[in-house]
Image (cartoon, rainbow, N blue to C red; front, side, top):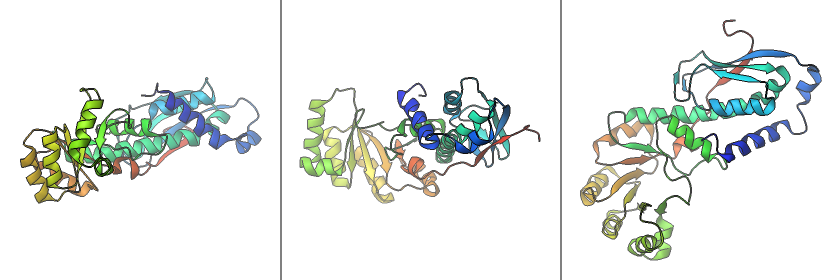
Length: 281
């Protein structure tokens, strides 16, 4: 993931927007090559994510900086735990601090939130999926964080999966026509998914040969009936404002996936600080 060229572009942009023509505070105080060690501290319980990109941020600032984390991405961390250290030129570390923390806090927030959802389904085969409701430009990182948290990725973009939504259906005239045209145009290795608004559309989609049906904002009694209609002929995905409080109750249904936009669009940042000095101070 972190070899993706988009990641390097994001780091470059993050540093450019923060530093601009120079860190006037740090540059006015530190004139020499003073070095020191700084420590990352988790100020709340979290799932760690973003260690490699933090290393890349600091190495972009100064190739002599050494960044070492005591844990790996995906590890659950308790509050008031030291996560790692960064050692090197003080000016370079201070200048890159905010960009590094922004990535670490954001990605750890997504991973932590995703872990809450997946924990609710730990004794079932249902997979938690993300969506394309991501921060513009940051999708590669945010979808990585979902995987670190135990979730799975839905299609990355418009290019790697077919999802026939309501506007496609209405513009095409019918689900049958939309599915037929998609099957004629794409390789058979690509699954065709159809967003479903009601049970009548569900019957049409299954008959047309959809591989996956997305039940959008279905009520509980409708989900039960939908499972009977599908009868294992397609995979079933639930979607539409599904909250953490209710997700555990969905385990009883014969479904395969639950997609949750909140994994990326509503996850808060984790409180992590970077402080100079000894970890046992």
